[in-house]
Image (tube, rainbow, N blue to C red; front, side):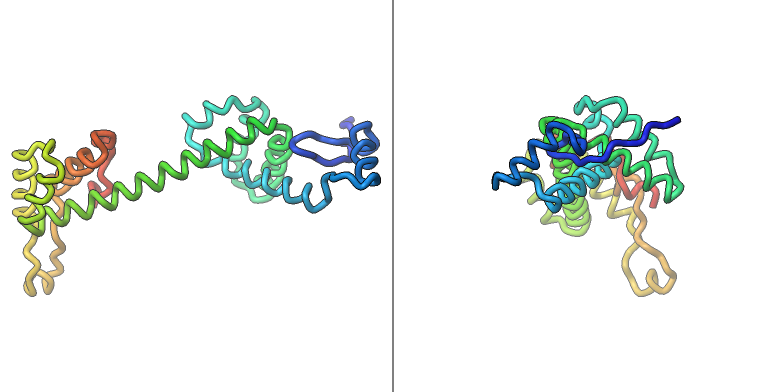
Length: 218
């Protein structure tokens, strides 16, 4: 026979059972006019922790491993990822929310910082991607852009850069009225993709040279 859950509330990650010594202490503080957790504050904290738990479902594996979360929470998150049923997912997220409220303030702060790292990293990667795409298109379209690139990034393998630009231009279908009428889109061959990788590698100091080009499958 399952035990009936105790009634209570959470304060800063700690469960306070109704009628307990801590509950009575909070009530005495409220009666004495001292600051204590209001229902609104408790509800706000509960909602924030529920949302934090949901965000953990998207956290990268390397960042998750650095948090040293309790096994019960880690297992709960893994189970939530497997559940597809709406009601089952909702109940599992409630369970995760309860586990989040048991975490220490230090662990909760570490969770927030890990999520911030992931968000900032994603934004930075997207910005670098768009910059590399813009430079690739300029290099193919304009000879002056090649000289400008070399002036800004003299560490580039200039021979390889010029060869890729020449080949990418050869591969491209001329944008003419005839080409448009035939439905011919510009080809995006190997040189086009390799030029993008070269540009991105230089822009990121080699950190992204092994990342697949999003245009490879096009």
